[in-house]
Amino acid sequence: MGVEATSSQPPADRGARGLLRSREQQITILYLLIAVTIVLILEVPLIYMTVSSFKPGVEVYRVPPTFFPTEWVLNGYQELLELSNMVIALRNSTMVATLASTLGVTLSVGFCYTITRFRMPGMRFFTILMLFVYVLPGILLMIPMVRIWGKLGLTGGLLPLALTYVSFTLPFSIWMLRSHFAGIPLELEEAALVDGANRAQSFIKIILPLARPGIIATFIFTFILSWNEVLFATIFASSQKNVVVSTTLSNLLNERSGWHSWGMINAAGVVATLPVLVFFMLIQRQLVAGFTEGAIKG
Image (cartoon, rainbow, N blue to C red; front, side):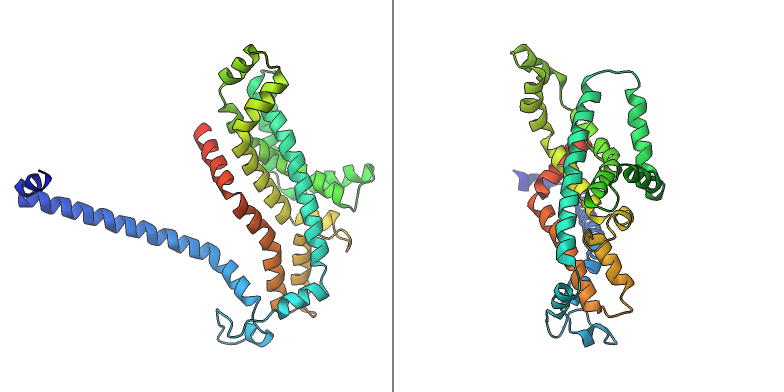
């Protein structure tokens, strides 16, 4: 029947539909090309850094340059292990970013649950004030932070750096989590209270599981923010014992005129990127789910 109906249509209508399908295909191909171009622009520097970390020293400076190495070597990684403190920096960055993210997300969960479930005077003002703090330049926050930790005797260590990251990432965490908690229906918690659960039980068994994608997404981004931060790390983690990944990379680039090769610097970039990349790949589904739910509920 469908064939008969199609064949019974005037040739002008069939031609118009064919032109419409052809135009839709062209638009789809155009969008695909734009998407591929954007991905290449974003990923080419990372790919070039990775393949350059395996190039011999002479090939790094070859003119004209080559994209892929003619010989794959590990000299850059050997130099990195022998001449830098990258292993210590990876350990310290992992500790600092994990502590800062855990504390920041825990405080954000409590704050967002409170402002979405209870009405208190001035809460909206404090929420806006927190977001205002987030948009301030980090250099403005550095001065009071140095004074505060100095008064408490916490200067020059990883703990003040992690606590500084909590204050730095907390507004961002609250901003991300607020829409997730606001989107959870109050009726679900009220039904649990009617069934005999107390406030803590309803929070643990109902609210937290429903907000889990948002909590995971927030934890990932606060972890990445803490991992990549340089300004506060330069102040609080300047010693060789407390050095972190961001300051190690900065030192390698600043000292390049001395004895560090580009192979070693590229290897350091790969090693610094690898933990975050693996972390992201392991929980990318929860991250996408968190963003999707946040966008819908927001």
